Image (cartoon, rainbow, N blue to C red; front, top):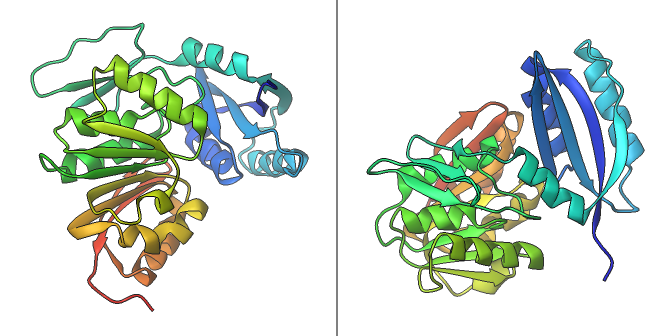
Length: 293
């Protein structure tokens, strides 16, 4: 079997600009980022799918142009990273992260201590997104804490490593359905359920997207996905909401918030609240009760 590979752009930026540069990389299509602080500088590794149709040279030129405006002219290195190297990199950089005041995410090989009322989510991310370090994941976990009711039916769309589903189960959610279109993410999420001693009666992980649950109803939907992927899913997701249900849309850049809220309104959803951290925003919406055109 051929190993999957990613193109990696490596660059160094002032630490104060790292969030902005990370947001640019995600907006340009990055599927994952790593950051390492070195004094007042941050070394970033931005990963892109090795797709022949992807204009990596164009992405590199765009990042170079934006960096020059910051007065940062560090060269951008390019290399191909095979699948086996990815997991080794995660293990090198993944440390416990307090994603919220109540939820800590940690790798299985580093134990943590928690107090009463706190939850520890053990994650070995492997090839799937979701270590708790990224602001979009932390915002989604904040929304989960705010809106989850005991026994709530939850949908985790684009589950990745399963971090949101596991946190929902630990916080008292009823049946949780975790979906992902990536077979390896599905396998990784199932492994992480085992790490956290969560059975399939609490969380079911399935391969597929919104179309796989068209006949179901959910009290809380978690969608930590980029805006261009979310936009065509807004109306179908509205159809999955219970009467008083909520959807937490994360993975959104702050500069996308106004446009995304307009799309939400067009889908007959009403914004309840927005949460922000760094360059990222989470929009929580509910069914407005209107009829779709």
